[in-house]
Structures are given as C-alpha cells and as structure tokens.
Image 1 (cartoon, one colour):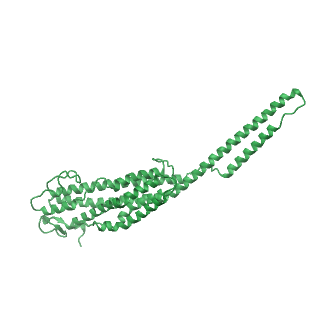
Image 2 (cartoon, one colour):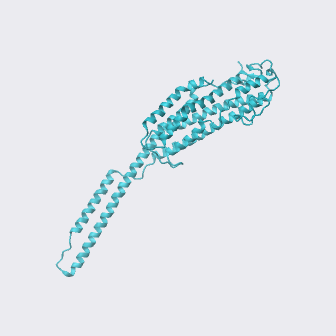
Image 3 (cartoon, rainbow, N blue to C red):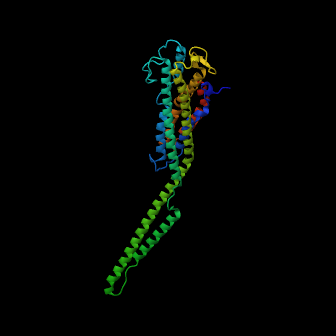
Length: 371
C-alpha cells in the first residue's frame, strides 16, 4: 500500500472533540478559582493571584475571538482553481482588496489559493502564540502560589504568647498600684524629702514597666493577627496550587490544538504552493488523468487536499463557534468572580460550571456540523 509521502496526498487529521476540550477546561478552572474566597499576594507581577488571573483572561478573550478573523475561503478558491486548471485563468475566487485575505489580487486562482492559505496559517499561528504565552504566565502564577503556600513566619504567635503578655501586663499594673499606695512615712523631717523622692522613683519605674508591658501586649496582638492572616494566605495559596496546575495543563492543551491546526495548514500550504508553481501540479493532473495514487476532486485538485482543507476549516470554525456561542460569555462571568475576593456569588459560580458542562456536551455537534 502506498504511503501519503509516496503519493503526495494529504491525509486528513483526526477530528476529535478532545482537541477542543482544553478551551472549555480553561474557563471552568478560572470559575473554580474565582469561587474560592480570598486572595494571595504574590512576588510576581501583577502582585496577587486574582489580579494575575484577570490579566490572563484579557489575553484569552483575544485568542478565543480569533483576532485575525476567519480566513476560510480556501475551499472555494481551490474549487475555482481546479475548474480553471488547463484552461484560460479566470478571476480569482477572492476579489482584490478583500479584507479577509490581505494582499489578494485578481489573477491566477492557484496564487490566490496560496495567499489565502498563507494568511490563514498566520492567523492560526498568532492564536497559538497567545496560548503559549498564557501557558507560561500560568506556570509563573502556579510557582508563585507554591512559594506562598510554603513560606511560613519566622515565629508563629499563638494565644499562649498573648496570654503570657497579658499576665505580664497585669503583674506590671499590680506593681504600679502597690508603688502608688506605699506612701512615704518617716519620723525625721530631714529624711522626708528623701522618702518622697524614693517613692516617686518607685512609682515612675512601675509606671514605665506597665507602659512597656502594655506595648508588648499590643505588639503580641498585632503579631497574632498577622500570623492568622499569613496562615490563611498560605491555606488559600495551597488550595489554589492544584487547580493552577490543571490550568497550566489546559493552556498547553489549547496551544497544542492550534499547533495541530497550524501543522495541518503547513501541509496544505506546501501542497497548494506546489500546485500554484505548476499551475495544477504534475502533468498527469493538468486536466487529464490523475497521478497514480492521487484521487481528484476536480481537474487538478487532489481529493485528499480538499478533504484536509475541510477538516482544517471545521476545526477553525468549531473553535470560533465554541468561543462565541459558549465560552466568551462564561469567561466574563468567571472574571466577575475573580475581581471580587470576598464571598463569591454562589449562583454565578454554579452557572459558570454548568455552562462549561454544556459547552463540552456541544463539542461533537460543533464538529459534525462543520466537517
């Protein structure tokens, strides 16, 4: 049996809902993190976990929105090119100046098809680059959270420390009361001044001792509160570390999806470029019999090429419809949860989770409708 390399045919890649699932998983995890009360100050920009996740969402919206548009007119352009192979070239399938295909001009339809493929592949590569950058940002947030979860205070102040400070303060108060009540008594007039001065000294010393003990108690209270806050932050950071690990994996999965699509388009681009260079490819395909092992869609257009284009268009359009029909609105709700570090909106959190389940269930239909 002949291999694809031997025939020059392009084998359509497998179309599976699993390829698109990471896009849904990313949103679900963000909703999960937003539904967890509290925030974690981090040593990396933008300074806290929630602020970092909100920053991720801004780039995710750009990636899901397909910033460069949908350059999916290749199928039509190839059909036109196939129909004109071996005949007088007709106007290109894409009119000159079409914003969907920058640089497209009227003329040879194979050149137009090559231009469309190039622009489409560049659009996919730009989305892939955003997801790769998001994966790197998620790694930094995960690692910073891991550091915050294990960073303990040098001395943990407990209620026992506070009890000891309060006891010391009570002792100092009793000493002051004792010194104040011990009035100077002497039978000698000459020594009365000395007795009064000695009394005043003892009172001043006891007063200073009480002040020092009071300040120590206040500092212990502050330190105990700081210990409690730090402990809670470590708890929140530890709780966030595991879903952040899953977020990293999901971002890598989304990157892989667009990498997979880009590689499909690179294969298509190479074949279209070869067809454009030969105005329809080998002699056997110029309006005549197909080359051995190459099925024809029409004059000069391999059927496997058209099938590969259909698969690529299906994946690209399915990801766009998944984002616009399911994910972008849900992503806005997840952002709303993240910008409020207080008690989360339980209804919104439940809605985000349900919408993500609905999006996952819709994946097979999205792909079947566009294959």
